[in-house]
Image 1 (cartoon, rainbow, N blue to C red):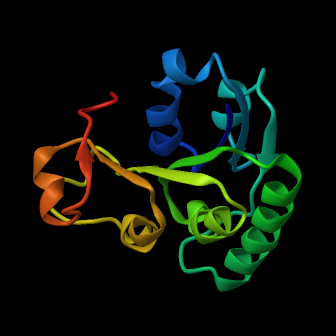
Image 2 (tube, helix red, strand yellow):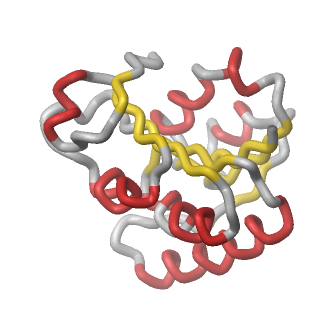
Length: 149
């Protein structure tokens, strides 16, 4: 399986790194920011650096959409997996257009309210994973998988 991981650095990346026993047996490509500790954590991985910052930065949203189109066209993943944040937004609708399955894992520290990225990606997710039962109030079709950290 070819996996495309798309996430911000910090806690978003840490949650995907915690899934290493699952993903280490598959071909994978990462899209994240060219920041520490991501450079260290992904030193032995294939990585493409996204445009930062993404929070309310419209020009970088467009730059990341262009990047997403290039990455999806050339890498052709079977699945796009993300924990957010803003970097993931163009990859979900475009991933669907390129025939990839999409999986979103809502972050563990947002229990009582949805994240902006979660709300945007939810309609495009083939599988929307939740880490807390309480998150089901915001995402009724989500599947509780438990905490990753």
